[in-house]
Image (cartoon, rainbow, N blue to C red; front, side):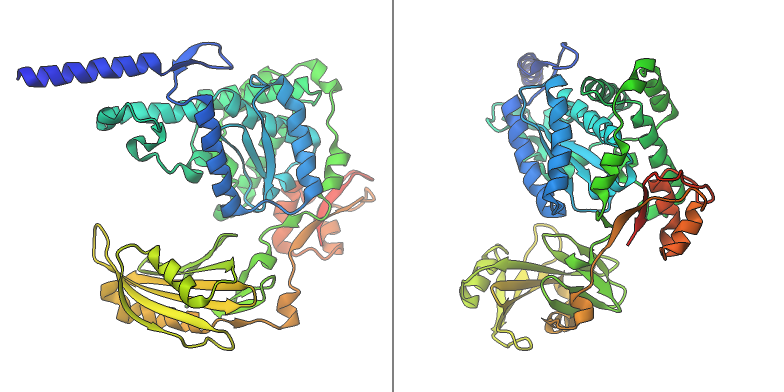
Length: 479
């Protein structure tokens, strides 16, 4: 019993000492708060997250547009509560409607959210909001709170030099981007966004127009198109009311810059980009890399710049495809890939070509810490300067069921030469000046815009389909 109390006393004392050490002054409030992360650790975590997010989504390939977003963001940095922190602003190549901040000043907007906005002032308000999360160190405070809740599990490791290893936080990755902040955090970020935008001479009231567009998009869209921004930055009537309370009559004299902003959206990719791969009639095509392979019926496809993953809908089997530029011979290349499987048991190898391409294959039984072993097939295929690696996965007990299906997909890999596929391109935003007599719906009909896009374009333009756009004012359409 005495030993129990001594141990309990030691833990309480150690936790108290840790809490005393782990206090920092918040840059926004000026008050002390629980904080287990130094600014250097925060920046390092941001660098790690930035690498992960670039791999997952890719940066939108429009240098001028990225520089434009960066210029607006940088104009607000001197007015922020962390003006000496280096900030980074970038556009992610995804139609997802979202904006978020990683620790250490890394701030992202998606091309999907740019299409929704209608002025430079809106963009400034959104960037300012994300800068507010960084300035107040909201993600770091949230993680510190999570660690405190788990401190009983890690009390024996409190002297570790790398705090991120505590409680399974060694690999932060993209989870930091999708932390759900508290209402008070969102209120504070809104307030800071208004302040930073105003001090950079932008009309902060445009934040309300953006909120309205988000709500309209949510109401008009199918469930899979609901703005992700609403899940990571929940909207409430109180939040909108608080923004209204902070606006002043003097704000009306500040810059909105609608036309200049819209001109920069001309040619912006709309929706998914088929140049990066698409599925049609049971086949995955990649126009840029000129290949194709078949997809099992009713399997789910997830395509990112990093890899293509095809999964059986119940999760019982999967096929991954990755590509890498290398001059290495296939045999040592396959061996290096196999080493990544850990303590795998090699079952067999083969050197059969796939179509006109050289290939090397290996099959493995891979143990798991929990559960039965996996059956894994690696297939490395040389196509020009690239080696394409297929990884087929299933439980070992179901290999006879799923690996014939996986093998058919792998063996179907071939060069794509059909000009209709190779030339397939994305839809893009285009701008027109209406005559002031046609409704938006009539204008969309005249320009041949597919009906499936009408409701979303109405939201993008902040105008009802049966309303008449103002003569001479730019309107977003598709080409």
